Amino acid sequence: MLDSSNIIPFVAGAAAGAAGVWYFLNGKLKKAQEDAAARSKTEGAGQLQLQAYERLTLLVDRIALPNLIARVNTPGISARDMQLMLTHSIKEEFEYNITQHIYVSSDAWNAVKNLKEQNMLVVNQLANTLPPNATGLDLNKLLLEYLMTDKKGSLHEVVSEVLSYEAKRHM
Image: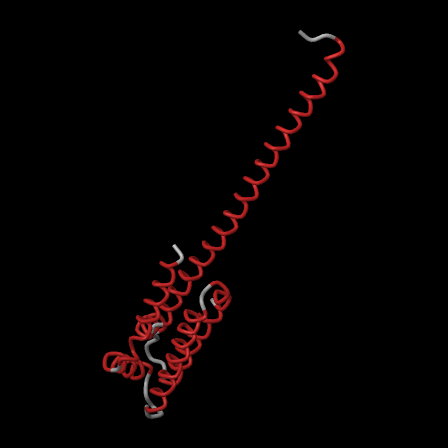
């Protein structure tokens, strides 16, 4: 039984106990919120990385010479004009996706850059072997023949595999 002389220490003890419980639970709640925020941030970064690998895979597909030729083919133009259209498309696609390099490994980014450079080199070198009166169709045929006979022609497949492998590592 509590008498008036015991009430003050009892209330003070109960208040101190309640405050202790409150501080303990509040600390746990803050810790849980901080952990959730950290997980969310990590998951968000992982999602950005996966999206970057996805976009770069699409870039590789778009600048793969067979796909590029099919997309920009314009009947009746000169080989020189076709050369310019192909190289311009490669540059434009690459520049559109250049910011993705901050989310992927340097190996993945270098593979994409090397594909871009190799494709532009192949287009320019083969275009320079044609006579001045060659058509865009002549250039496209020469490029497709090259792709079928040279191992470097399938570099886009290798780069796609590298990107796919790295993306799966981040899943």
